[in-house]
Length: 312
Image 1: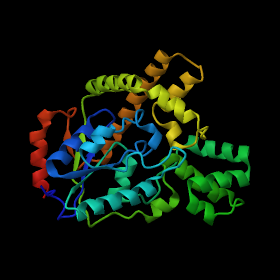
Image 2: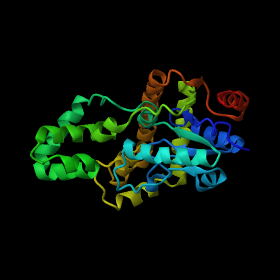
Image 3: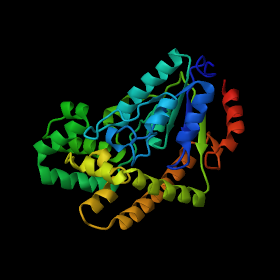
Image 4: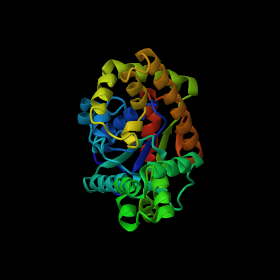
């Protein structure tokens, strides 16, 4: 069956907070409408984080086509601009194959970048400005510039280590938003595409229960060993992969700072806080989305089928 949106150059977005069931929903749509699931989650791009990022299992990835999952090593500093280029290529490939591209994820900045563009640059929180200046004082201009160049090669090539103000600005932007200044300047809205959006938004109590279940499953599936293996690489704490939900909490346990039950409770709490921020962002930024006030289940499929068939 040919995807109903391929001819019109549209791409479906499936969004929602963590543990809302969006991956299962995207896979169900891909099975029924000959689709390709394209990752739009900033942590599921990292190869070493399958369990803690709740990436689809190898069997789930084989069941329907999945793209941009586990594509970068944890040692790489991925940015939204790099992801956007890769996502656009996968969307085009899906269209060329007559398939429905399905962008699935909970990283709002990724979705905003690909739909709207990201200019002007959003504000940088004061605490990140302070951190930038402290880091600059600690490392010195040359080493700080080298760190910027690793995270934002374009800015690193353009700016002199002695151009302190602009170097700090470039570092602050990539630290705050995971995007280089050049990403913001280059990312224009994609007028040739349409972006119908399904937003899963379960009730808070239900979502909290699902988060607890997910964290317990992660631990049972080997999340501690996954983080232990990651730590053997001795990667800088400034890398995005080292700040993924689950990594700081389980790393602290592995360093002997507290017992595993305390680490698990800390991870559940931080995941709930993250989901709260996601829900707020989606409600404010995806106002045109078709919102489903439920966790994904098979009972939603008739409504979803109708939505997708109307999109063409």
